[in-house]
Structure formats: C-alpha cells, structure tokens
Amino acid sequence: MSVSTQGLRVRSSSTALRSAVELLSSMRFSISLLTVICIASVIGTVLQQEEPYSNYVNQFGPFWAEVFSTLGLYAVYSAWWFLLILAFLVTSTSLCIARNTPKILADLKTFKEDIREQSLQAFGLRAQAELNERPQAAAERVRKTLTAAGWRVKVQQRPNGWMVAAKAGSINKLGYIAAHSAIVLICLGGLLDGNLGLRAQMWFGGKTPYTGGGLISEVKAQHRLSPSNPAFRGNLLVSEGQVAGTAILNQPKGVVLQDLPFSIELKKFVVEYYSTGMPKLFASDVVLRDNATGRTKTARVEVNHPVSFDGVEIYQSSFDDGGSSVQLQAMPMDGSGKPFVVDGTIGGSTQLTRAESGRPMTLEFSGLRVINVENFGDRSAGRGGADVRRVNLRQEIDQKLDAANRLTSEKTMRNVGPSVSYRLRDASGQAREFNNYMLPVDMGDGVPVFLLGVRDTPDA
Figure (cartoon, rainbow, N blue to C red):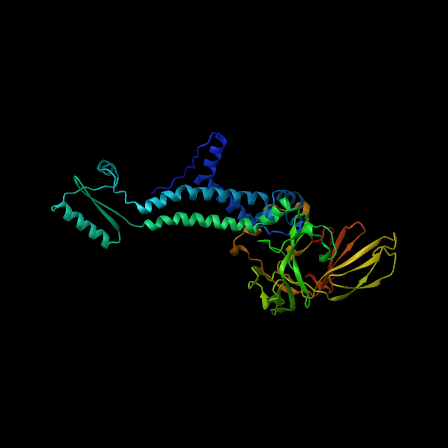
C-alpha cells in the first residue's frame, strides 16, 4: 500500500477551488504547517506568556517589546495567526485522512491475487524456482508453511497453475489513520484551548473587554461569558472566608468575566516554608458548591494537584494577601506638609487630596508580602535598574536557552522581610505603582538601605 503525498483532485469548473483543495489536502502542506506550529510552540515555551507589558519592556527594551507585541508573541497560543494555522492544519490533515482511508481499508480486504504473471516478473524483489512435486501439493505445502508463520493466505487455482497470495502486518496500515487522527484531535484541543470560543463570542456575540473598575457584580452582561462556555482559562481571586464564582480572563485591551457554574469558598489557605525562607507548599482548603443542584464538595487545591468539579479544573497558581489591615506613614517629598498616617486594607482604597492643587487622588492598597526571598549570590546582576535603552536582546535569549551545566552562578537566598505595594491614581484614572520594603536591606557593602520601587505602568 502506498500513501499519496499529492493533494485531492476535485471536479470543478473553478480553477482556484481545484488548486485550493489540492493544496490543502496534500501531505507536504500539512507537514509545512506542522513545522510552523512546532516553531511557534517553542517561542511560547521560552517566552513567558500573558505578562504585563511593562515587564517585556524592561526585559527586551521598547523597540523589541513593541515588535514582539505586534507579532502576538506574548500570547502565542491565542494569537490569531496561530489559531488560523491550527485551523488550516486540521482541515489539511482531515482531507489527507479522507483521501487515503478508502485505499487503506480496501488494502485490508484484498490479497491482490488477481495480479498477472507478467506483472510479477516485473517486480524488483522476485525469485523463481522449480519444485519437484505436483502443483496442488506444492501450493498446499506453501500455504501451511505461511499460515504457521502468521501470514494470511489465499490459494487460487488457475487454468495454467496455482496462485498462492499471502500478506502479514496489514493492521499496521491503521497506524497512518491513528497518527493523523491524533494530530487532528490535538489541534482541535488547541483551538478550544486557544480562546477560539471567546474570540467567536466577541466577533459574533457582541462581547467586549471591560476596561473600567468597580465591583464584579456591577459589570454588564456584554462583558460576561456564559457558564456553558466550553473552554476557558482565567484567574479567580478568593480571600479566606469569602465566596467567589466569577473568573477573570485577561485580554490585551481589558478583561472578560467568566461566570462559573459553581461557587468556591476558601476556608483556609496554608503556606509552608523551607529553612531558607523559600515557599514549600501552597494549599487552599475550599468548598465547591454547584449553583444548579446545590451539591457540595470539600477539597484541597495544591500546586500541581488540581481539583476537578463540574468539568472545570481548578489549579493553585499563586497567592496574595486577602485583606490585611495596614498603616502607612505618608511623607510629602516637596516639604509642603507634615507626615501623616493612612490606614487601609489590602484590596481596598482611600481618598487623598493634593495639598498644593486640591485635586483628589485615590490610594489603592494592592499587596502585602510578609516574606520576600531574594538571591544575593550574583550581586553584579542585582545592582542598578535595567536601562531599557541598552537591553541586549541576544543576552536575554541566551539566558533562556542556555544549557543547564553552564549556569554556574552561585545562589544565596535570603529573606529581606515584608513589603507593601500600592498605587496612587489621579482623577483621570492614571496610576503610578509603588513597592516599598519595610526593613533596611544590606546589599553587600555593609550599609543597610531602604528599598523603594516605583513605575508608571502598573500591572492593573
């Protein structure tokens, strides 16, 4: 059996249609698409996906960050060109299966015993011999020998002699169908997992990203997805003792809310640390409650140990402060006023007023980390901020792709104490994010210093 690499030829008066079908159904075209998919998957593995844009600017510099953003490399698996290639690959591979499957199934049933003697003599692998026995006895002996060896044998009597046809390994031909069907199945999974359903709802269902703030319950239906959405990947933020049932799906121009068919109540969050201060265990003790039936399930969600409920896989991806009370001391840097104290809760906000202009500002308490473990082994790499004008793209790529045995830098992990992060947002909605370490840190020169960070492009 030979599998054709040529495309499927259809009878049509349209030359463009005939050429398109022949190209899509050719094996060479499928292999080319599969190669492009593999290259794109490598990019998606090496380059961290779905990070804040400012992180990519710090890593690659403004120019390359914009180039990579235009190419959609920050969300490769949901980029329009990646989904388009997947769709073409599914179509091409399916046509290859449709073209070759009838031939394979026909080969499974036939022994090709009707082949002519002249055709046998034209075979490159052939042998000829004279047997000192009657033709019927010779045919029977050959049949028994081949049958004992595991061959399927068919004997046919002809006017001028006997034809013995045998074949083995026919079932191996089904491997072609199985392998290509597996490719189709994997690509269909990639389409479903690549936010194809979300994009379809945005294109045809009137769904749009949400760019504002406020309570989740106040977000309108045009920014929400149905609980029957077949596939999605989002983040769910739940504080201890609280209940949540809406996931947040990050998009390039905002967020989309995914209503879940169940609610999650976080009973307790557990964190365990090694002696060095590195986290050892993240675990969430949760109660899952089905919205339709009221069925409940108690489970523990750990890193690499997800919990499945109503067809949804729940993973422990990260953790953050869920509402601790903090007290900050504000110090006007221009000398226009005296220091004052601001009380707040992580996740909440409070209103401030500029002394010189009287304009209102919002102070948003975004995070509190009681333990921060930093690497002080390679001190030369930790000095100073990243100059985005002199980012070495080749060096960044080498660090991602370098062999493990060449990473010889010594790591010295140390807990530098708690840190608090907050945002100052003006009346126009523009925000500036701050991250302050609460204890002085010795950077290696013997003089402890307070570390304060600021950036104009917050995560949210």
